[in-house]
Length: 303
Image (tube, rainbow, N blue to C red; front, side, top):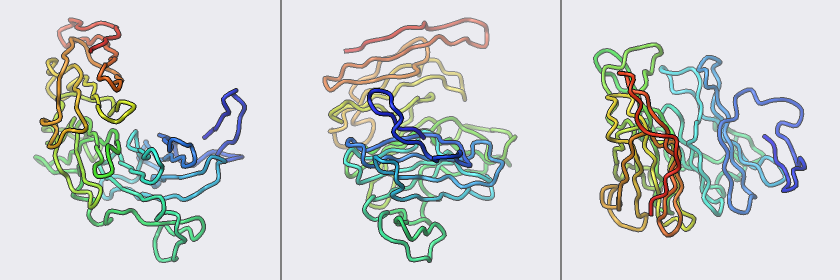
């Protein structure tokens, strides 16, 4: 991990003299930069390593860390892809593992000194516990399910703290829990947005996108968010390509908050949305199994 000043001068590097044992996967910070959170993990699923969430201050000093063990018996290692988000004021952090588990951390509680009784105890700095009961996560977001003799799960893609009462989690494609293995059907929550309350982590609603989504992108004022939808790897349905735009201030579920959709021929790789609900999206062509190519390389602006 590196921090640079605006003129490109190196401010600090972590670790100072070597590398982390796991890959560094994602980073986020509070708006003032005083709570920088990043994760490490083993994507090869072969070294028997935990995923680790680190919080450091703007000088690179460790504030707290939390180790997430592998989801056994399915995996021997754990990792976090883009499932890491910090609230603007730095008070709340969520982590979402690739295998489908979600965690919530209140920064002030994580800074409390440890008691030596927990497996992740650090004593100094703080070692606070995840705010959701660690025995409850097996019912949260997605976990491997047995279908026709195979275990499948929906990959954990991204996470976003949408308000003080809600966190959104984005699932990805259906994958085999034991690799290699068959995928007899799509996981029920494949390519979906899952809304959870911050009090207990319970699922409030789900919204299926039909295709793989690159992330959850909010307007600067947090009023709107856009979901760019790409390839449907399960059925190959090209009608799902496009962007879905939601009003975050509307009550109700995903269907109630959806204000419009814009369909495209090609897959949407990325998107951004302004506070006046203008969307910029990047489209790319897709080659079909019959050899035909649909879509174009282009930037699309939707107002």
